[in-house]
Image 1 (spheres, rainbow, N blue to C red):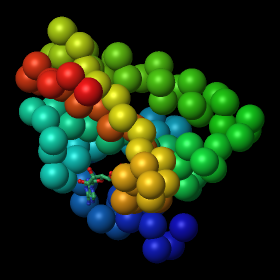
Image 2: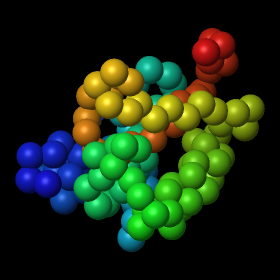
Image 3: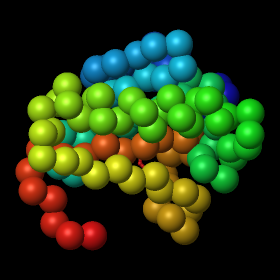
Image 4: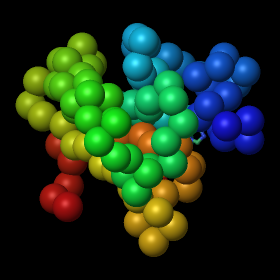
Length: 111
Ligand code: AMP
């Protein structure tokens, strides 16, 4: 989508601190980190959020989930990490391109 911020990051039109990319996803550091480590895992294709997924996205979703512990290990998050997916305006979603927040690096407070 031409007016989507994260699509522009995928296309390389907006710079980002990319830590991983493959044929399905791009992972970069959040510009306004809420923890010592704060990554965003996004699909290359434009999907608005969890409300926009269907069975065609099963393999993509599995790929994104399976990547999380690998990324956490690479970031040195041996003791654990937190993942968040905000969905819709009511769920605090601000960028309407599916993304998983991966946070850690300090002992995070209880949720
Ligand atoms: P959400 O509220 O779940 O939609 O989260 C959107 C996230 O995107 C926020 O944590 C923002 O700090 C982050 N963000 C917005 N613009 C950028 C950008 N250009 N590069 C990296 N992260 C961004």
